[in-house]
Image (tube, rainbow, N blue to C red; front, side, top):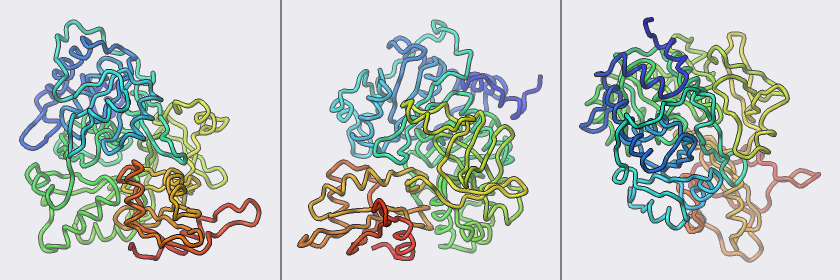
Length: 503
């Protein structure tokens, strides 16, 4: 049988997908980083050797292995080695610190924890020791390779839970989201088929590989047989040289990435910032229509935007052959097999790409309705053409640069500050970030005036991750509240401060 991207989508497991792609195009590159290239055949071979080394260490099918690693070729190899073994993986995004990492390790009951050692001035091994993590090893130095012939057979089923991803949701602690190989393949297939890619394309991973977008994007590479450039640290304009050197044709990530590329293009409007680029694509944060129009007009490339979340890595995706109106104002259409139902304005989902629930059975029960649809907490409508338009959110979550931030976590920490009487944390529209974090504070009588630097310093000392720190502070005489339970009316704060510039 001739394999096609659509037939490959039926792969039972991620390892099955790796093996089938390696058999088709073993010598074609899959991952590019700096001066290094990994082919599809090498990915399969190296992952098997690392899987054998992990097996010698005691990792077995079903063993829970957490890893907190930057975006490197070796990280992808480790992930696929664990997939070859049928281990349960718990990826942790590298900028998380003691608070979130400790919670993830405890809740997942991780038996091993792979870290990068010291990276970007932070000692991850020392943090792991502080947290009392089990089976700590430095992934780039301590992982032995072994003899693949001694490995057990690869997993035959892709419907068992083998992935625990972490999302903040509406509560202070992260939620462990349960995925299978098949749900990740289904999500990646939605992205891949919507974008109309080909083996001649060159993609890019400028986001943490530990994010749900990691497997989403890698599945796309495996289905269509083209490579992607990996960026361990992404910043513009420094990264542009790698985009140009490797001839990247597809870039993006989220609204923040679109605006960064657009800003670079505006420095030299007469020259394309990336000559080979033809498509920007992404999701994870609201996309203002004006951003779409500016990218198409000024960069001369197409922009397709989608809708996904940790629970469902890809729900809808814009396609290059959509109308301008749909590309600018909607989140695209769902793939075959993804059911979208609007109930009292809320978007609900059912399909293979939907997660199996959460580590906490109580959270799972709350998240799914009686017909098995996931309650997203997002508000939206579906057009006559099947395109989804998001209109708001029920969840009190801020999405900054594609990452979910719990307002309650920040509020709980600030409530303990002696100069804070009461506080509400909100997300405000931001052209670069999607949303920015704004803390609105009531001060007790006689308290010294609170400043944004003081708030940031305090939260840093409390161990809050850098990406969650407020970028705006507003001090008010009284927070607006309703007449019954005296709940803070956050929509009034958003209305009041949405036009306020950062300060």
